[in-house]
Length: 305
Image (cartoon, rainbow, N blue to C red; front, top):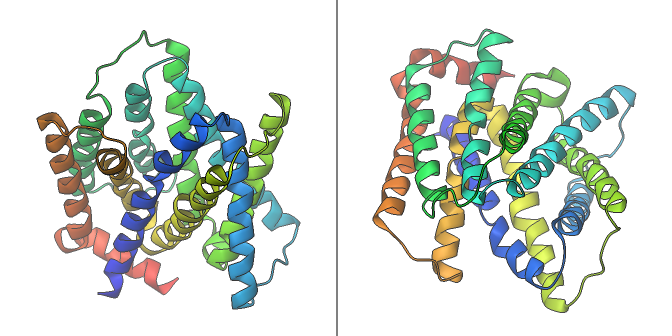
C-alpha cells in the first residue's frame, strides 16, 4: 500500500486547492482585492509552516544555491496564479480555468522532451478524460465574453508556470532530497515576496476589514495553502510530476462540490458527466502502476531516492 500513498497525497493536494473559492469569495465580498488576499495567504501560510518546523526541529539554514532554486520555484508558483487572474479579466472564468488545466499536457511534454520520460497511453487517456471533465464543469455556464489572443496566451502561460514548478520539484536532486517543510516554506515565502511586490505596485496591501475576513484568510492559509502544498510536494516526490499533475483535475471538482454545498449552486446533468469523467481519470492514474510496468518501475525508483 505504501506505493499508493503518493496518489493519496496528490488527491489531498488537489482537493484542498479546490477549497480556495470557499474562503476567497466571502473575503472579496468584503472589499479585499485578489492581490491583497494572495499576499496574506502566502505569509500566513509561512507562519504555519514555521510553527511546524519549530515543532519538528527542522532548520531554516540554507545557502545561496538553495536560495536560487527557492526563488525559481517561488517565481513560477507566483506566475501561475498571477497570470491566471490576469486571464480572468479577458475571458470567462470557466474558459480560463479550462485553459489553465492544460498544465498536465505541459508537464507530460516537458518530461518527455527534456527528461526523455516515456509517456504511457494510460496517462494520455487520463489527461483527455480529466481535461474533458474540467471543461464540462468550468464551461457549464457558457463562454460568456469575447476571448482575446493575449488572454489565452496569459492563461496558457499560467499552466506552463505550474508545470515548470512541478517538474522542478521532481527533477532537481537538491530539492528532492530536502525536508518537505523547508522546501514548502521557502517556495511559499518567495512566492509571497513576488505577490507582495505586485500588490505594492498596484496600490498597497489593504487592511483586513473584519474578524470574519481574518478567519477566512487563516483557513485559506491553512487548508488550500499549507496542507495543499505539503501534500503536493509529498505526491511529486512519490509518484512524479506527471501523475501528480493529472490528479490536479480534482481541484475544480472540489470547488464545484463546495459551491453546491455552501454557495447554493445547482447540479446539472452536464456537471454530473464532468464529475464522472474526472473520477474516471483519477481511477486510471491510481491504477496505472498495475496497468503499465514502466510506471510501476518508475515509482520503485522514486521510492529508492
